[in-house]
Amino acid sequence: MALNLDHSTAIRPQTAARPSLIGLSKAQLAETLVANDVVGEKEGRMRSSQLWNWLYVNGVTDFDRMTNVAKPVRQKLADTFILDRPEIVTEQVSVDGTRKWLFRFRDPQNPNFPAVEVETVYIPESDRGTLCVSSQVGCTLTCSFCHTGTQKLVRNLTAGEILGQILMARERLGDFPGGSRPDDGGLVPSGENRAITNIVMMGMGEPLYNFDNVKQALLIASAGDGMSISKRRITLSTSGVVPYIERTGSEIDVMLAISLHAVRDDLRDVLVPINKKWPLKELLEACRNYPGLSNARRITFEYVMLDGINDSDAEAKELVRLLAGIPAKINLIPFNPWPGSNYGTSPSSRIERFADIVNRAGYASPVRTPRGRDIFAACGQLKSESERLSKKDRDALAGV
Ligand code: SAH
Ligand code: SF4
Image (cartoon, rainbow, N blue to C red; front, side, top):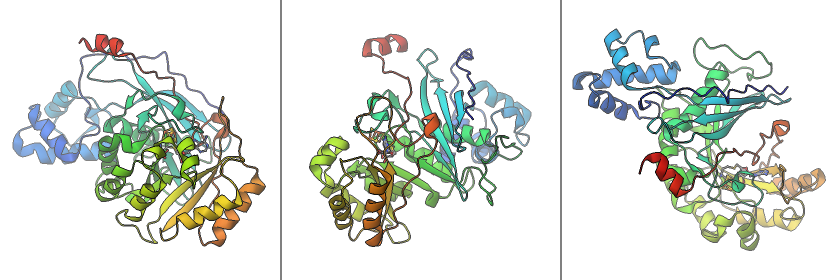
């Protein structure tokens, strides 16, 4: 089923630039309420806790629904702030139940600035539901097998925009109290109350090149008195931005995935060009030192299977040798083609043989079944039309 909700013509009129409260930490929320004279200093903490609960537990977007907040305060809030969620440009549902949204964000501080668009994907499985979230519009990196890599970086997403993807997906999937599930079947994993149980930062962009905003968003998403998504169920995937790997563990404390894809520097330099800056030796050293690493908290190494490029028996053996001593899982991803891509997917017999070698060395190495290929929602297929403006155009729009 491919359901397309095209709201692209429904551009909302821009009113005065009111900032959004989504994406502020609880302490920042209290400060903001006080600084804008919505409440007095004494009330700041109490009101911010109430708001936090409305925003992240109840998923409310309308201040008027905050029934335990006095009416005049609600009015002041509505006059001063917004609780913006992205617009849905399209929503597609794959034959396998995978759902892909194209979300559009506007800059509330800068109403004339062009909106940007990103893709977010929901993957239902029997025992979990995973939301694949974007961190940037486009990517500065140019991994040669990745569709996102062909889109220049437009900009980093804010913490509020990263959370906005999660909030909007939860709304669409009926994950907030009183919400209703879409009736297209097969979406809700059995035995779970929530449609979204896991988050992976594996959408568009390199999350560690937008560290502060990704950190803020993931700390809010995992806060126990808010959306309460367990940090063990949040995975951040990086192409290998070595200086931020330690900080990911110590400051965000989520699960780590590394886009490895090659076992030799000369090949990885081509497939994942950031390797020229931080080669395999440094990358693996950072992995060995990842805070909290243990057999119960392994690093996932992602390995895209490219026909005739990186899929030989010798490479499987070298992979095992390289990872020795690192508590690891290996995720073999059949290459997902996209228009204009120059690679082929390894035949399934080759993937099985590769997986066999890795399994025999004691690694669980699930081969990731491509999901949502019919709606172009599989790994590495995400891209949006947003384009980078020239400096001249940006300055003109910003009134510089
Ligand atoms: N930028 C981050 C996260 C996003 S990509 C990173 O690179 O880790 C999520 C995963 O999909 C990465 O391992 C990426 O290398 C992989 N990938 C990219 N393009 C792909 C493709 N066409 N087929 C299969 N996997 C792909
Ligand atoms: Fe960027 Fe990740 Fe794609 Fe590489 S694989 S271009 S880092 S999104």
